Length: 359
Image (cartoon, rainbow, N blue to C red; front, side, top):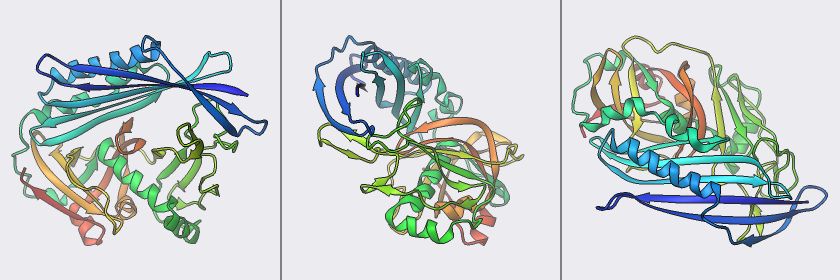
């Protein structure tokens, strides 16, 4: 069996003369045996006139124009379009991702999203509604009772918690923890699923194993860890042409679902993660520095720092609000906004440290 994988990658950098876009194309032809295992590959030269390369250039120029019309501070943007083609060279699946780094008055933030199908919908899918508020520094003070108000994490900071929790259950050491806790309800009614790297319509990974969705947490209950095969999660192998071997996907694809909940009145909303500091720490904690506001004073922005273990923070979840959003940065997570307990409750349960900082 034969198939072709095409990747068009692009980088946009601002220059005094305007945005500069560079695009490259990589085409790899794979061979599979009867079991579906990839046995080899060869690379061929592609033309940047290919449709996927054109799509990447359009994505980058569109996102630069949209950001420039909202805030002044685009540092760079990258976009990728992956195509899976059959033995006749006909496309059978497409996946695109888009990531922009923007310098704002509150610090650098990442805007990223991902999706299957035509990539033209990626730019509108970015959270433009809140971006304009980053044009000025978050210099307002929080209300006096902010510690008693519920916390609501938008999709971007929620994705960091989901990725951290998934890693704590699927890493080599975390698998032992997941096995020990299997069947126990340690979270509220949240479900975390690990999605295959293979696109829709591909039922095998590159080692020939079934590429199935696996549930890590089912309505709050820890599931047994998924089996491994040749040093990686079964069903997640991806062929690397340069190494001539399979390896795990560069990013896990995760999905969070849970009970519906409206955003509480007066809640403290953590909108954007500010970059430039270490998020994940060796002791298992995450530290998020976020631009925040309250729902009753949406024009006043301030900085909140949230630190704790992802699993412990998710234990204090009340539900999910808003629409589902695909977040793509240092993780690939589809989620809604996460409604948490108040800072006072989180700290009272020794599950987090929450502070307000000046820029």
